Length: 251
Length: 310
Ligand SMILES: Nc1ncnc2c1ncn2[C@@H]1O[C@H](COP(=O)(O)OP(=O)(O)OP(=O)(O)O)[C@@H](O)[C@H]1O
Ligand SMILES: [Mg+2]
Image (cartoon, rainbow over all chains, first blue to last red; front, side, top):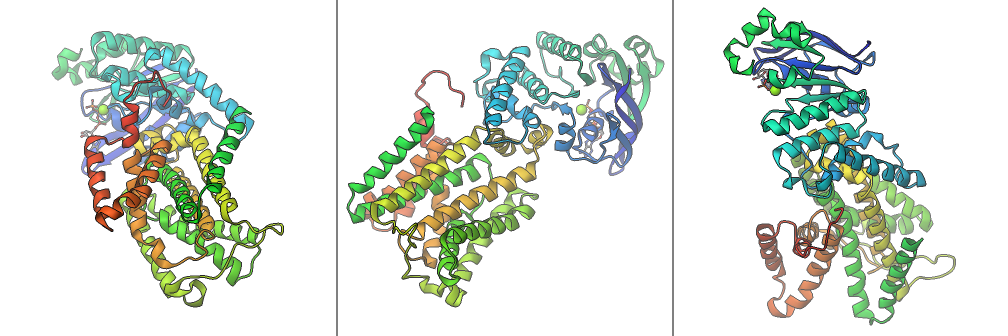
């Protein structure tokens, strides 16, 4: 399988703190790659660098063999990398369906007044409806987003990111703060996304959630990669057990 | 097809009103229509794209002065004068918007406040070009294909301006562009992650709505057949803001309700409290913000009428 995203020697410092240090890894086509590590390990920072929200101090990122490091977030989205936010960031003044349609922004050709524009709008509308259905928010499609629970907001984030027809989708702790049932629902949705042929980069610090889901796992601690492999390899890796010792409950 | 018929019917009806109004009421009606046009475009700028700008009424003035100067000081034919006016408004809007939309929203507020003030200074100091403090007078709309459009017929032109502004903004609001504007307003970080070029969206919304204000100003120039500095002062910029907030920010219907209410209120209030209606507006504004932040149109929404897309 070929790599869809490749990060090489990413380093990011905040003042004296090195949040990400010489980190290299690759996401392969159609896989769910887990990025795991204790609190403060640098997972979100890595994620924000890929999505263009932060700029790495050094290192390179290529997506579909083209360099993307340093591009603004909207350019990275346009190339097919969509993301969700660790703390849901919906568009408050819009309905569920409209939120999802904003996710489809890059799918519009730029027409506003032609016959084609009307057809495009109808097509994206229908697609957005299907995505809202897919994540299980069909009943709430016209609801204002402030009526959603936290878990439903998470599902909305996912539908919105999918609307951009991503080739790679980035999830930052999608199960955090959810009930067990809600987390199960998210896991099912993420499996469904991978089955559609979309590569997934999944950040998580809860191993119980991640290990059954991921095809491969990269383990971070203090910004550096300490292990990489299948969930089974990683589970028994001494460095991982070490890093998680203080977090025994998580393992 | 049916919607096209609807627009024509609206144009005919709204224009027909003018033929039943005497000179004074026709003038009131024309100004009311112009305020509606301005409130609609300001609502798109402030309410939908979320940009706090105080230049909207200044662009109305820039459009009005520009068309008069191009027509009568430079002797351009009408179509060229209109085009030149649009170009001037676009250029000024871009000069203000490009640097300030890259910064915090606060800077756009400052830059547009400065523009509004500078505009008045330029008008007053403009010598023969702007007519100084007295403005420009004694001109009339040139004949179009040999016909002078006057009286209720000119009111029909204003009706077309209002409906055209409304149709355009409504169409944009329901398109990917309108959604991008609202996404940028609600959460720029998430909007960017969805592929929206935040700075560009703001610049386009600012320029487009400023040009619409300019075009409304061009139409206004032949309502009173005079343009002078006091009309375009800052208080009218704030009045627009009040109209949109009191009516219901982000909603076309809200802008219309706000414009109608605040334009007509002084006619009712003046006999009672003279020229202190600014106080009433201020009080109304506070009440609305505290009790119904969605504006008067939000009160109407409270009555449930089944599921709605918006
Ligand atoms: N914008 C920032 N400014 C300064 N320091 C930051 C910033 N963002 C992250 N950090 C620091 O960088 C380190 C890595 O943070 P990061 O958010 O990437 O961790 P994480 O692995 O996502 O942790 P968590 O599991 O808690 O979400 C932490 O020490 C954090 O305090
Ligand atoms: Mg994090």
